[in-house]
Length: 364
Image (cartoon, rainbow, N blue to C red; front, side):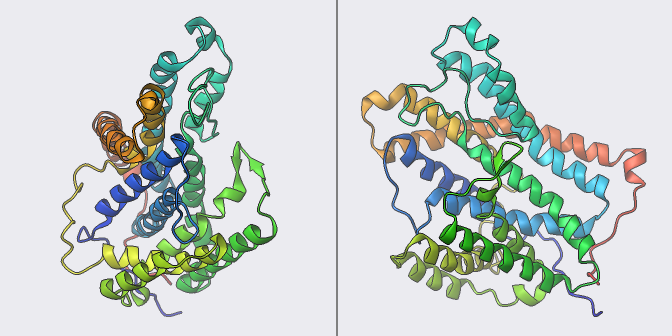
């Protein structure tokens, strides 16, 4: 079978600024709900949901590229672990030992003796739970400590799916296989929305039905590693299509079908535009993951203390974005960056460094 040309890794892109904007979109979308307002959807989809889909698009592209560069499963797993788990552990422990004692309605002894603390700690193991005893019980959006965590098990699941897909379909054309997976998963997602909108299937603490909204975008992101697809990107055309699409007044199902095609095209056209002017933004310090992790809990803290002032959505948004960025910076410099360096040192140890790597040159 003829090799399929894979686009090599490059820093000449706008991915960092896109991820940061996506994180701000998530914060912005959540702000509506946390102050008791109702957001106006774009193509039938909440702004926060679009932000999460952008994360999955970029993640699909970068994770496949990482796997193609080094397909050893041990090394691949180490990289993924140190990218996700340390930051997650930081926000979970911060919520338990700082946010909880400050905002619980229970006496501290009762709070720390409550068995649900142990349940909440399982978020570190991706068993998602949103409640801490008595925390934010009187908020406008009550009891939920960090609603953003729901997508992380889906993200890690897709990390596992990348090598599985390449192993199971090793004899097939990889580009066509990924396109098929993206379209098939989107069809399943649409069918679910039409015929089973209230369906819930909970596995390991997560509603796997919610994952159907994100998995197709991860596969679409994977597609843009192929030069044959990337060559069709055009930022001017993508911008025009995106503007027209955003002006359409359609229901959630039609909007999802439109978004599925125009959002990836716009995101990757902007990411790979010639001479990307934002290529140096957040190149050394990536705060987007921290913004995503801390946004919801920081917003809940601010609403708890400031709701009586009657601030508007925009005022709350400015305050929460600045506050979340501070926490994201602390998370990056104190936890994420040091742990990623630790992961790199581990990869250079005598055992791991001897594991065979495959250079990115093409896929048969």
